[in-house]
Image: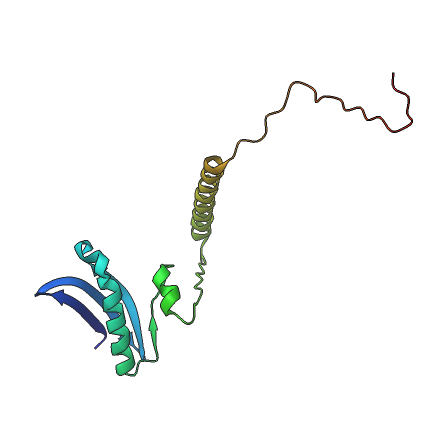
Length: 145
């Protein structure tokens, strides 16, 4: 079958569940969720190790954690693939919609960047209104007045 559901139970109570898809010799880890009451026992991680073992036993070529930058993926993954999206418009109306969409995304990114800049701005040194004292050096043999 295409869908594989893994369940972790304790005393007959479901504490974690994982929905995965299997296709062309690969397991795609779509969604894993757990009961927060059991968070200290890492039920999601326990379940993930279980479905990775199952995948190996079933001869899967790989387990794909799909998109997202969750920390655990770096610990378990041996390869990271960057995905890109391409969009094209076939009509003038579609082109106008694409331009508007790109503009909205750029404005949102600019707002977020400005928010970060103002949030992390450190106060610079205040300009002193009094002049710095003048240092006079007297070299040996120089006349002083």
